[in-house]
Length: 602
Ligand code: ADP
Image (cartoon, rainbow, N blue to C red; front, side):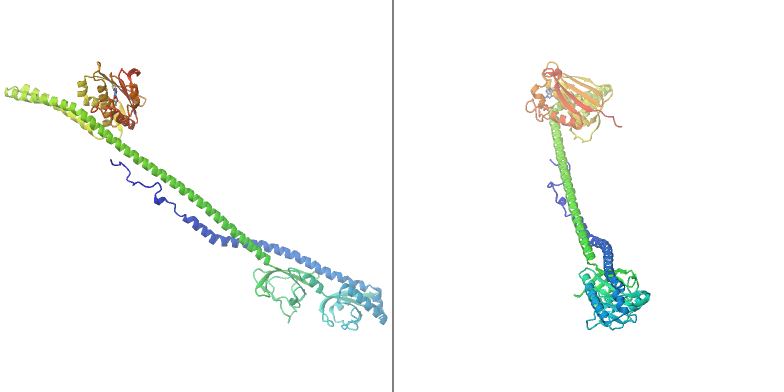
């Protein structure tokens, strides 16, 4: 037996070509995300964080600068009141009006006490000529007493305008200081001036621990207060990248210039570090209220760099994590898709096998059908031989007679004999034609089949048997032909089986009547074949259609006829059922064929 379909060799349920392949694209995507996405996003995040952090830093630098400014002004104002107050002092006025040694000595000590309490560098009283009359440092080697400072701008300003300020290097002490002078007036007469010189070392010390580098430049752009000692008396670079609130007047020739390098944004300054390398600072400047001085601060940009780095790292980590998560999801999805594909493939494989098995079964069934047909043919051949022998013998005697009649010169009788012979050959041809049709293999395709024709052919095939068994055949078919879905040879085979069985069942019965009736309605045709035999034993009814079930003697029946007929009718989409007439054995059996009706095709 060879399989009818499917040439695929038997394969394991998971063929090699379907084994999971390494998922290439998610790995490539991950690599791309890590190689391209991480640096790009990190750079973007770092840039963004740097911009934000720089804005923050700029704000806080401005706020800080305002604080230092207030601090510096407070320092100056705190001292500015002292010469003003002393200018009103009666003892000072008395001294200037009458500089007796006793007066001088008294005031020297008084000034010394006040300067000591203030922490000022010097406090002294000058005559309108510029001569120093009394001074807090009267007792020291660098005493101002007797010195003439009439050329000093602060003195000139005080005498002319009432108040003068100046920052300068002391000519006697060589110590830089800030001078505040106030005119002493009595009865509209200028008696002289009181001068206070203060240093900024205390302020500078107070500034020193701060984060910022601070410096104060004068109108010429020269640094005179700073918490970076090496910058003192250095000039601002001639060309600054930012415009200062008060531009320097440019009389700082010959002075060293601050070691500032400019890079990047306009307000950034790069400074050489002691240990090598550079550090970047943000420059902020604010002018003092009188416009003479400008306070600058340099705030380190390190926190900005640090924030940018942290943001960059965070963003990189986030992108990497995101990429990994996406990779994991993609892998899961791919695994799922692959699993589904494998399931689908195993299902398809299963279906293929079922189809192959079904085809094998069908082929086996066809073989069986064919075998059964041949068996039936074998059984029939005896009857057929008898059937053919009879006409042959008749034809022989007709022919012999014809010869005699011809000799006797009776051509009419000869013609009649020949006519008989022709009829007999027609009859034999009909028998052999039927047999040929029956032995032919089923084509396998279904189409419209006429029940009338099938019944007629089956009866013709079994004619001799029915005659031999002396069976009366009654047919009750509608006038109009009824077409059903089926195949002529196989339907004919079913009918031959059923009619043959009926004839067998009635053997030896007093009444041998076969009734074939057809009713067609609502898309169905019901064809019943009833006999007047002994019927079917109750116990046999359930196994009637089981292959090889037979009650006939060995050599008479194979027990295949009904099971094959049942299969054929099911193939047609119909059914075959068996019952006893009137429901009990003894009244004969009735077999009912239920078939789908169809239109006759042209
Ligand atoms: P077989 O005719 O070779 O025995 P079948 O499959 O055609 O095989 O029939 C199986 C059995 O069914 C028969 O042996 C018989 O017992 C029973 N049978 C079939 N047709 C009839 C009938 N018309 N009346 C009573 N019994 C029947």
